[in-house]
Image 1: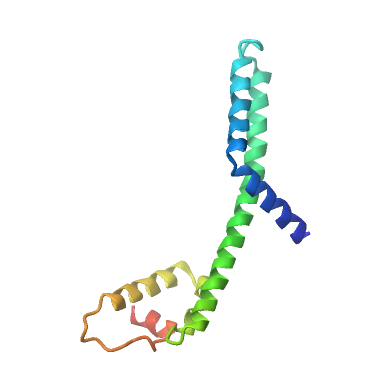
Image 2 (image 1 turned 90 degrees about the vertical axis):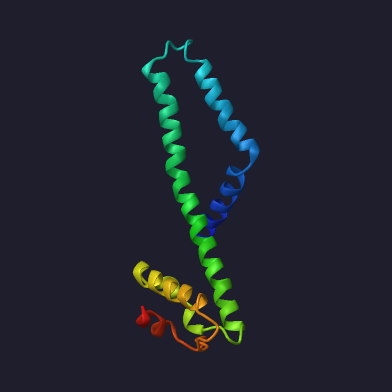
Length: 136
């Protein structure tokens, strides 16, 4: 089921991001607007566009979220591999995306302070993530 959904999500995401899709959607809106007087601006006429856009929006939310989740996971895997491959990189950073938002903010603040330190400061590349969190 996951593979089928991923395949569908990829195809729809690719299709939805095309200029032709935007032109199609714009054309539908224009036709709908032009037909307003023909249908005397009726409730049914309004319901057609409201229902259509609601359904499309509802489904696109899930497809977009799926794409973003996969993109973020792939990016994390790539970054984790870079951390693993670089000799002086702190391997404790692998998996920090699972920390709480507060912990990540503290870690980011500690790293920003470390980068902004003066030349006389000792090398802290050996510090662990936990040590950096404790310093904040």
